[in-house]
Structure formats: C-alpha cells, structure tokens
Image (cartoon, rainbow, N blue to C red; front, top):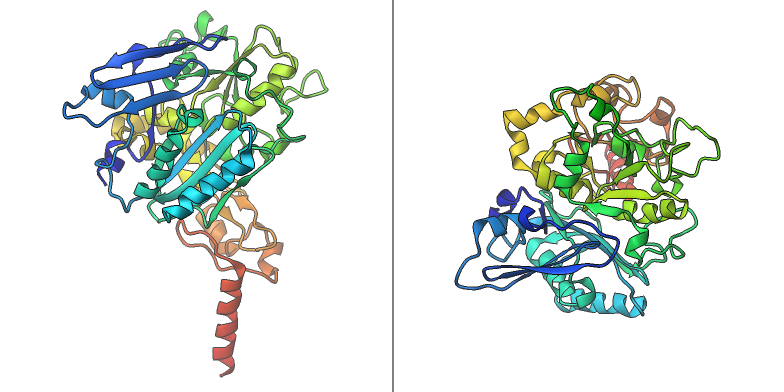
Length: 438
C-alpha cells in the first residue's frame, strides 16, 4: 500500500511550480532539465514525463511535483482506477482497437472498464490490479501519439470498479446532442485554455481575503460554470457554482438559450467578448468538448480546470471545494481525502463547513449525512438519488411510494454496495419460495 498512502491514492502527472507554463494560443514546446529527469510540456496539452531508473535518485521536490508511480511504489495486487483522455488524430481507429485488445489479451491483463477510440483520440476509464493497469498505461505511452496523456489514478478498495471491459470504436468520445465528430477538437485554439490547479485556485480567491465586500472582489468578471450533471453537483461542487439543470451531459445547453435571460443558463445575456468563463468537470474531457461548442457560439474567454476536479483535489486539496466528488464507477462518491490526505486534518476539515447544508434528501428534503447516491430498489425505475437513512428504511430503498409495490423489487442496499444483476435476486426469491412450499 506504499504508493497509495504516499500519493493519497490519486497519482497524476503535474508540473513543478518553478516551471509551470503560461498559456498561449500557439503550440509552445519547452524542456526543463532536472538531474536525471527530463520534463517536456505542451502549453495546450498535458505533461509528458520521461523517467529512467538510475542509481542517483532525483531531487525530492521533483518527485513531489511530478509523481509517477513506479513498480516500487505500490503492491501489485492493489486495485486502482485509471482515467485519461487525449485528443489526437487516429487514422485507423478500428486497427487501433484491435492493437489494444491484442496487447491486453496477449499478456492476459486483468482490466475492466471503458476504453473508447475514434478518429479524434481516446477516452479511458478502467480498473485492475495496479501492475496490470500501469502496464497498459506504460505500453500506451510508448506510442508518441499518446506520450503526453495526463493519467490519473485512484484506489479501488473493493476490487474492480467496472463489471467488464468495453474496448471499442465509438463515434463520439463524449455523448453530446448532435455528436462531436464535426467539432474541431483536434484544434487546441478552439478549446478552452487549461489552467493548472494552483492558478485555478488563485482565480477563485478573493482579491482581498480579509474583505469579501472589497470593490476588487465584487468587480470580478467571471462565471464559474459546472459542466456536469445536477446529481453530481448535489454531492460536491466549487463554492459559487450554480447547479446544472440537467441529468445527462448530452442535454447540456449553456450558452444556447434563445431567451435573453434564463435562470437555468448562467451564460445567457452576458458579454461574450469580455466575460471570463471558468469551466470545470470531473476529469476535463467534457469541458474540452463543450468549450469548442461555446467557442463556435462566439464566447471568447474560455478557461478550463486542467485534469478536472480530481486533478485539483490531488494538488490543492479541498480549498474552495465543498463535499465529495461523484465518479462514474461502482465507487460513486470519493471524499477529497482520497486524493489529498491532509484533508483529514482538523485545519483542512474547516473547508467542509456547510457540507451538510446543501445536500438534501430527494424524498423529504432533510439534510443527508452520507454524500453518496443510491439506485432505486425498483429495477424498472433505477433512479439515482440521495436519501436520508430514515427514508431508506421507510420506503425500503425506493425513490417513491409507488415503486415499493413494483414487481421487480430488489433488496435494500447496505452500506456502499451496488446492485447486482436482476437474475441473482430473482433466483434468490425463487429458492426462498421453494423452501417455504417444502
């Protein structure tokens, strides 16, 4: 468990503050030489770290700034979840899929998850024993097209976080109304400018921390845009971000309102040329995609949180963040301490003041103590919702009274468990009925 504790279970490549790049609209490539290490950075893309195992160890500050797990940093059997994406032209994505499958099957790697490829690049979220997961990542990085990927790793304490492997061609790396194949995702100038976590935090800090009513603070000309789903916001978000009025990213329509002013659209009736828009999502890909749509709509000053919330929490902790982070795997909800262990100290826990004030039970609107969604026990409903313990008990894990009488009713989930396939519960009921009749 060495590397899990050292890196708080979330490892992502990051630049040392002394070499953090400024952002430009053009592609700038530079190198910074540390003893025995070479860092290569594209100002519009992600960090590439080349590490060669040498007898002389690198400086401590270099390791902290660019934490890349090695075979000595973890137990091979520890399960992890790996997330990354990268926009790059792939001439023959079907052949690329075949190559990836051949590599995984050839080495019999234990990988479950979603890995999608198309002409615009790759989007991957998968789980597995750390030795297998990182073997796949290192193999991918040997291809110069993917050498710059920003890889984020977090622990999966209960084994696989995904039921099976889906590695295939997919027309859209992200599901958006109308698809994304026509969007200029390969043109960095059309995407939002990525901000390092430290710069993002500085942008959210008031100019005068001792006076939140100062003129400088009140004149901030930016909009904080949460480019996720409403249920993700419900368990955690940046202070000041409006709750998205969507339950599926495909339906996101910020900046598309036909009305001059729309309460659900913070981008309606704003100055597109002078207003700074700070966008964030879980890992970054949704912002990169949606920012190209906004760019085409005439919005000029678009910024995104590089690596998303997960990368921010790993580097900056819960500063300006309240609650947990929703993730699209069996874990569902991760506290900041998973990424940033210092968040468990008393000083950093003050960042969570009010965490139980915004999270409400879907049924009775009371405050919930557990920032974790559950699925309705009615299989044919399966609604994902927040619920207090009393309502869970009263409605037997259902989201409403009518669902409690549904024909395909599953047992109440206990703890952080997830529902299994329906046939398992069906067979259990059948066996129970047979015992009673006998």
